[in-house]
Image (cartoon, rainbow, N blue to C red):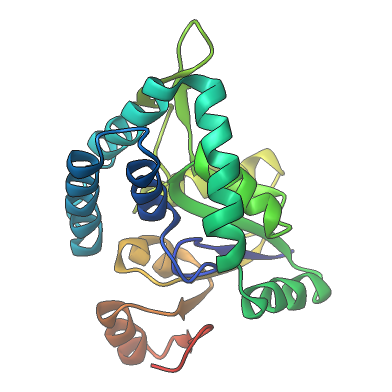
Amino acid sequence: MNISLFDLDDTLLPIDSDEAWGNFMARSGAVNAAEFARRNAEFYEQYVAGTLDVRAYVRFVCEGLRRCGRAGSEKLRAQFMQEIIRPAIRPQALALLYECRRAGEEIAIVTATNEFITAPIAAALGVDALIATRLARGADGWVTGEIEGIASFRAGKITRVSEWLAARGLDWDSAHISFYSDSMNDLPLLEKAHQPVATNPDARLRAVAEKRGWRILDLFSAP
């Protein structure tokens, strides 16, 4: 079986949906705009630098979700999808996904961004399989601010993909796996994949890909 795995932010989307969600929450007035935007920018800088504490970041993101409650958060998410995400979906990304499907490949999105934000994005891209960071739920059924299980971040993506494969009766030896990503944070899974594809790569990943002879795909624009 041929499987193509895709990172989401800055790979299939030309934006970071996690950062965009934080900025959207700040602009919407759902949280203290100045404080939220400042902390969100700090976390994003840590992500880019490869120093992000993903559990601390998820607690931060969930502060807004918990304050707004389920109904309020879902309403904001629908607005976010309409105003921010749908305009960011590019035909190049849809064409790439189409070509993979036409080749008979199974497709999954593997993203560190949490499931609440990314589930409707995956649906809008026409991808059924989503491996995202899962949010723990309390007795009320709403998010607690903690992560359920292993975050799909850095080496955690390998663990989560392995679980996903096992649920299908597969493993790394019984499937040919391609992985598309823009970020050095995804180096562990890129190295694990049979065919790594540096997609819209950041400067560090581009240098690694060039040194190792990996395919480089500038999906949205030339370097």
